[in-house]
Length: 223
Image (cartoon, rainbow, N blue to C red):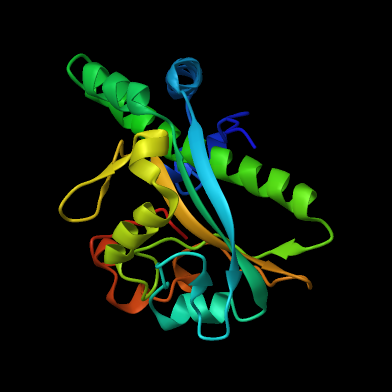
């Protein structure tokens, strides 16, 4: 399956920008549309994925990576198989945001938000394609290292399992952050029965009580 960026959800862009139902003026609408179009032209999405058997001891047959944390075990409890996915918009988007910031920080902020919405669209399209390919199986929601109680350090064995750096050019910093930043890693369970969906928003996040973003009056944008 190929990486597909089909559109950028304006509602998601506004959410990343911190809008909470406020009216968006005509000038802001023009800025949003211009930046979204520029990002669509610039992005070069790529992805790599692999399907693994999910064992009773929570290991993945065929690779050394064993997902950490109770949250992911709960999500995958009905899944006989697990998909590991890594996707990116490419270095071109990161370069675009950096160049734009030198000229207009306002546009750079919009591009950053549009990039976050765009990589989610790539992942959503992959999941839709995967669900069709694996039908009549059902997919869980995506879950990434750093979510809930899954340690961010899971990125390293995850990267090794998919050869992410070699295959799509995404690398890790010493603190396990991805470069380019508009990249995603995720685990997706594959089950023979429909899987529940969490609601979006801080209320559904397992780390809501001690979240540093909420303490600062913000959202991480993950939930």
